[in-house]
Amino acid sequence: MNARLVFNLLGKALGIEGILMLPSVLVALVYGGGDWDGLLIAAAVAASAGFLLSFMVKPRNENLRAREGLAVVALIWLTMSLFGALPFYIERAIPRYVDCFFECVSGFTTTGSTILTDVEALPKGLLFWRSFTHWVGGMGVLVLSLALLPHVGAGAHHLLKAESPGPSPGKLMPRIGKSSRTLYQLYLGMSLLMFLILMACGMDWYDALIHMFGAAGTGGFSNYNMSVGHFASPAIDFVIGTFMLLFGINFSLYFLLLRGKFRQSLRSEEMWVYLGIVGISVLLISLAILPGLGNWWEALRQGYFQVASIITTTGYATVDFHLWPQFARCLLALLMLLGACAGSTGGGIKIVRVTVLGKSVAREIKRCIRPRSVVTVKMDGNALEEETIGQIQVFFFAYLLVIALAALVVSLDGFSLEVNLTAALATLSNVGPGLGMIGPTGNFSSFSDLSKVVLSLCMLIGRLEIYPILILLAPSSWRKN
Image: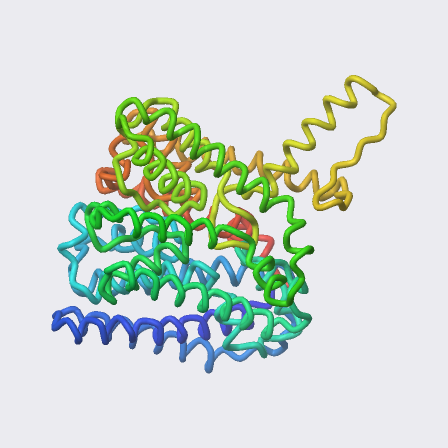
């Protein structure tokens, strides 16, 4: 393990985090809040720690291999969450550090789960930082680092590869730094467009930024206790719902569109499966809740927004869907598991993996009927290697295993099976709200410290797609060659 290089990169990321806290200081000053000093102190602490690590720990070489790439990704997400929690703790807005850590992990991993019982009680600057972590974490902390620091070494593609929401290296451009900047240009452009449209719908600049951060990063933090339901506006519901779905699509497809490769972008099988699942789910949920509403338009409006919010793992809410019929709630829980497209800002298992798993099942059925037949699994017209299919199957098993183990630990708190399972599912899939007391009108404050730590790890494991955290915990990863 090239530990010196790992800690050097960690220092650079912490320096960037210190800079990223400064806009929240300005917001606090604009609104005259007393939270500016806590944010400034936290920014100085993060920047100082980053300076010490990056300038005092000089790597002997910049040969970054796969295991260093995975380890540095896990370390940066964990450490940035630890330092990012400081503003809440310094200001005593959240008195206990474990709760501060939970809230910040939820922000950076774009989960949206919260321990806050009264969101609106927090100062404007802290609320801005809380939501800004969504936007930073949406495209990926490491993608941002590579965009700003493209000289990290020849093995930098391992960093980008470990950042699960980003497309695989080489999909966009041969140079890592240029690819990272292209991703952020697309991300920034779509975010700016959403911000302007929300302003046109009647939001002020602060509310528009907060909800743009949450939708772009598919995180779901709001500055209102009622989430998006606070606005009671069909136009705002439609805009946020549509942009959540757009941010749930692989960003490499947008790049292809900008390059004029329309046919190639429209051949994405994953995108059409994703949109098909959305359409069918909206129809089924609308039919399920129609008897209680008696209005087709309202049923479609609620169904569209909540399906968009859950499948993209954003977690915004306009209604308390825990009160919906059992069928609708079960369907939403299934959407939590599926998640959005690979290469998007969404979480979950990802539609491409689910599609491959479904085709694998269909292939086994055909083999049972015709044992001598040769059937290949294809995506976008290309045959998949058996190794790739096996990796997806292992990932799916590991995903379910983490949910089961996390739910088992959380069950020590004595809550219902529904709460335990959806708490593990909602945090691992980076959705945010679950069912029961952790539904859209509830929170995670009642869980024990042990459960909060376990659920925080679930958020990190889900955001980094399991393996980077396991690599970090494996003793063999830190041995010298």
